[in-house]
Length: 98
Image (cartoon, rainbow, N blue to C red; front, side, top):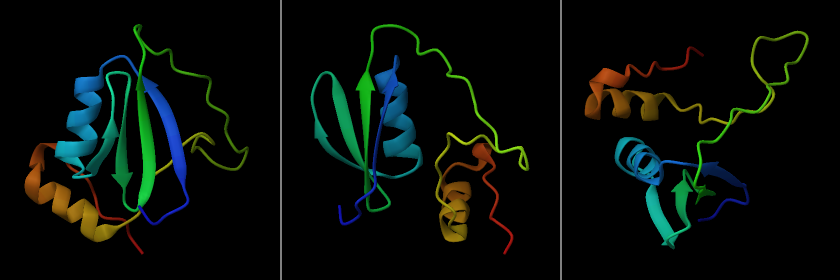
């Protein structure tokens, strides 16, 4: 991974998280243990940590001038959205208008 960005988060369903990031998004799996897994998220590292209970959704904080929550991350790449649609048409990712 060449990027400097790193984010870690928890999941109660590791198999589902691995399927989403590995199979659906196509991120390459890195190091792994029985408690966590790393993925190369478009050149940056994400670490998913398994917890034994359902993760409660934290409160969202909003910019007063926007409907988008402050606690988010994403990738804005049109070619990526189109490639996902070709591999998984049921997901209906849309390309970003520029």
